[in-house]
Image (cartoon, rainbow, N blue to C red):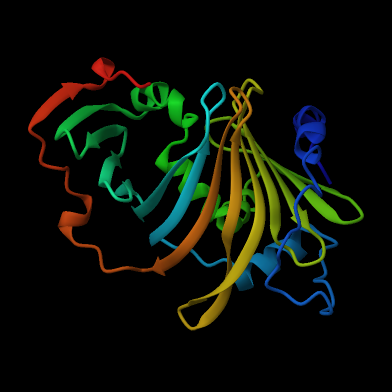
Length: 279
């Protein structure tokens, strides 16, 4: 059942999250001939995720990204590498052929740095300051990409919260959740295989922040068992229409990070974040 105070969240989000459904074929790693999992209750979904979505405190993800920005012709293409160790750091590195490394974003707690490799220039400040500067990239932060690939784990955390409710439909479950920061989340879960097909995040005031549509999952060997992980997905920022198409190349679970992995880049010049100007 859905909690009463979560009903406005669903009412405000339902049309938006359903409007893009069925436009692209969803590729599931599970056979269409297999019987669907029993998802009649919240407990059923928790059990399924317990079997499929283990915690990944250390993760390495590489993906090819295509960024479409309203008002700008064409798409920007680059390869993104996301590295994360829970409660320690998140790092996003971008490379582009034939140029090579182009940027490096490092988040530690509330601190953020953005390093431009070719110029040897580093900007430093807070996460919020960095987000406000990333308009040309659709305000997509490293943690947004990390949450996108860890969506099954994020759903599992949501189900463990007191602020969660479920609406059952014929072909899917809609899971509504408010996180500790008051942000609103809606997950659309396929009844056929229990995979998240769409995730919508809104601010505490209800403003659309992020919409992710999943197009393909692959099974990945994780500590001796197969887990479904997103392999292709579209990220949209409803507020400005920016869109990122992500094609994952590979995952590494529990990679052997060193101190250098989370070290700040050596920069020739350092400036405060407010001085950063993005095109």
